[in-house]
Length: 292
Image (cartoon, rainbow, N blue to C red; front, side):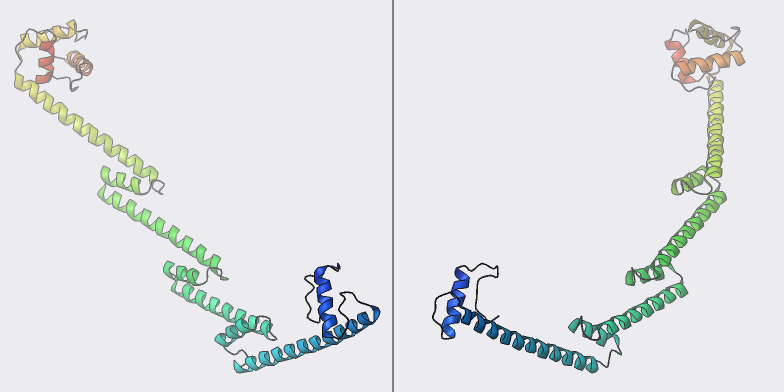
């Protein structure tokens, strides 16, 4: 209490305590022994009590000065009539006499600002407006509503995009258009009709391609100008290779066409049922005694 360093307060009178007693005895005209007698203990207690009272008075004066400064600053900022003054006051006096009032007023200001920002976003009612609100008030009272509205808008945009893409696919009505729709909207609302129509168009395209190939093969067979003997040899070679063309009469009827298709399939040739140059060459390679 009196300013002498005992090197700790632990109830043990060690070297630090003895040194402090020596210093006190010397400063107050006592014999420096490092030990206290009854008189010295009484004197020391009186001095400590006096010093404690002085320190308490100093604390009271300091507290009074802090309060005067606190009140003076509160007056200087206009008793918290504007946000800047309130924030400045709390920065200087976080536990001041008017800190509760300042905090409450700032809370009201923040609440009003939050509501005004939300009303502005709601009035504009765009995703950008709601995101702007969240950027400024991520923890605001209307943050959940802003996020929900953004989600609704995104869902509505997705539905509109889905419908627009489906409308475009229907207008074009091509396999590529429906395939593009399915690529963009694999879980779209029109998944099933798009898949069905794509399958129909793909089948139609395959059928058209097959028909065109058949027509080409028929024309190619006609250009070869196979006579009855050549056609009979083709049928006999089919028999020799294990394929049944029916009667070997050179007629190339349905049975012969089916046998030709089986032969072509087995030899990795285009399966047409007609004798084209590739098929004839392979028949010759397999042993048919005809010139290509």
